[in-house]
Each structure stands twice: as C-alpha cells, then as structure tokens.
Image (cartoon, rainbow, N blue to C red; front, side):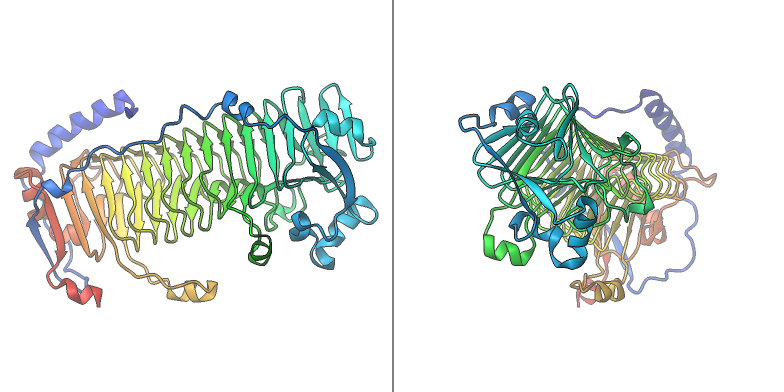
Length: 519
C-alpha cells in the first residue's frame, strides 16, 4: 500500500539532507568519550542479499463490512426474555463472587440483584421493551431505551441492537451492563453508559474507582460492532474495562471448556472508556476503521495469548494515561497496519512482553508524549513503512528484543533519537510481578528508510548482539556539528559512515567475541 507523507516535509528533509550529506559526512566529526561498553565491537561489510525483503502481504480487508455483519445474524428462531437472580450464573460469577462484589449490585438494585437473560434465539431492544416493565427496561423516547438491570446473552442466543434503536442507555445508578455469552450485534446505533441523575453520559469520576456500565464478551462468544458509537464504558475492575472480548478466568474455563472468543469491531467510535478495547486469549479479532478518542488508560489493548488479530485503519488519539495502541504478553502473529496514533499520553504503538511474529506497517505515529513506536521484550517483529514523526521522546525504541527488522521507515523530528536500542535489567520488576525473567539482549536490522531531524541522534544503540544497516538515509541533523551516531555506533562512527555512505555497502556491527554476550 502506498505511504502518505507530507510533501513539504519531504522536500525540506531531502533538500537539507543533500547539502548536509555532501558537506558534513565527507569529514565525520570526532568520536565521543572512551567506550563504556563491556565488549569491544567490530564494523565490517555484510552481504546485501540476505537483507533483501519483499514488501509484506497484507490481509484482505474488503470483506469486513456492515453488510457482512448483518448477514451473520441468525434470524430463524425467536428468543425468550427472562429475569433471574444474578447469583450462581456462570456468565456473572466474575462480578458476583464473594460478598464484596455482590454488595455493589445489592446497593444499586436495593434488593437481591437480578439480571435480564436472553435465551434460545434472536431478541432486539424492541422485544426487551415489550417483555419488561419500565423499572427494568424502558423506552424513554422513540427509539431511545434504557436498561436498569444487567443484560446477559446466553449461549445459543443472539441480541441485535440495530438502527431501529437510536440509543441504548445503560443506567449507572442501577448497575446495568452487557454480558455476551452467545452472539451480540450492535449496528448503526449508540450505546451509552448513562447517568440518570445528570441525564447524560456517565463521564469518569473518582479516577476509575466508581462503577460504570461496561460490555464483556466471554469465551466461545462472538461480538460484532459496526457503524456505532459507544460512550463512557468501563472502570478499574477486572473484566469491566469498557469493551472486552475475553476468555473466562482459568478455573471457569477449565470447567466450561469454551473456545477462544472472537469478533469484529468496524467503522465505529469509542469515546471515554476506561480501556477503549481490551481482549484476553482471543482469536482473529478484527478492529478496523474505528475512532478511539479520549479514552482513559489505553485506546486499543489486546492482551495475554491473543493471536491472529487485525488492527487496521483506526484513528487513536487523546488517550489520557498511557498508550494509544498496545499489545502485551504473547499477542502473536497479528497485523497493526495503516493506523494513525497521535497525541496520546505515552507511546503511540507498543509491542510488549513476548509478543512475536507481528507486522507493524504503514502506520502514522506522531505527536505522542513519549515514544512513537516502542518494542519491549518482544523479538521477531517486523516494522515496515511507518511514519514516526514529532514524538516527544524517541521515534522507535527497542528494549531487550532480538531480531527486530526495520524496513523503509521514516523517523523524523522526534525530540530524542530516531531509533533507540538498549538493554535493561528488569529482574527486580519481574520478580515483584511474578514474571519469567527476560534476557537483556537487543539486535536489529535497519534497511532503507530515513532518519531526519531527530533531536539528539539518528541512531543510538547500546550493547547489541548485532546491528545491520543498509541504504539508510541520515539527513538534516539538528546539531550544528552534523550527524552524530550514539551508543556503540557513535564509537565506530567513522567506519560505519565510510561503508554506509561512501561505499554504499551493508554494515554489520557485532561484538568481537559474541560468545561472551550469549553466555
């Protein structure tokens, strides 16, 4: 797919780069202080052929449409509506287990807590209004409904809230929320966590400690959201983050043996959620063409052991506490492509904690308050054709991660380094969090692309297993003394630039005795 780049920026960078390349690289500046690295490194020419890589094949997104979602709705059987106690219901045990959790619903319902159950077939919001009293589910205006109890879609049942419903409101005061254990479709509608006292959305108060309605879709279920707006869901409580697709807790999963959940979230808007999206042990989830705006902790946050995800063509911005897009803890073999992530409190895109085999391609990541793209403890990932611009720390940051391949990326005008690779001892943190320790190793291949106008250095790499560079444009340095590589590359700058710039050969930087680093 073609990359979009600001033409004026490209012209300025290339123009300045031609001049700086001609003048300053002809006489590389003196090297910095004496090496502080434990190992000595060598610089040598590498063969070009192994570095060649065809542009990655992207998944076909043409089938993820509103029409395709509507075609999935089973319409043969009419469902039933029942009201039952919340106790001893598998789909609700995460929210009612123990007296402390149950007390929340007793307080809000002023009695033994109940929930609405959809069973046996297809039910709509209109069906709920006909079957239930206003104290439980009410049509407040034509096409505007409010739920005053939790709604549970049972296994084998389907809930469809469609364009006939202008808005489905979930009462914060009465403790309403949505649980999907079957099929749930939200199409051409609005779902709002509703504060009845204010006659408006349940905007965040008390820094996420206060209950807010949420949506959770359990193991074995399918969730489809298309052309809809979801507002103010979720708070700081397990499985209650906002919109979640998640496997049951381990003890429940062992007993129920439900398959991995899945779903599509397409062409929709998610605003003011605790997490814009969260998943856990999910498969083949499609998150395409959405806007994630002003969410609290994360915009998009797939988590533990999810795989085969497509995160494409989304706009993620204004996240207030942490990152725009993050995948963490063995989220593998997924695509993060053609997204725009900007103006988030920390990084724009993060790959974290043993998440491998992912493609991060053609994203525009700019104006974030920390790094642009961050890779933490996650090897074997490919970054291709991304634009990483004007972030307040590093453009691309790689920590404790091996075999990271960067092809044809643009990292420009970031406040610190264009590409920063480093190691960090996390043993104390890992022990506190009861996590397996990570090796402090970093290696990468950088082929093509442009590093321009970054604040401190185009590249800074500390104690790598290996670094390979080929056809990388280093232009438009901010410093008056020209291009200054940093870390081990700074110590070997004259040799590196001689091969890379003058001779136009691939460069390999590795330890003289690599066995010492792997023992």
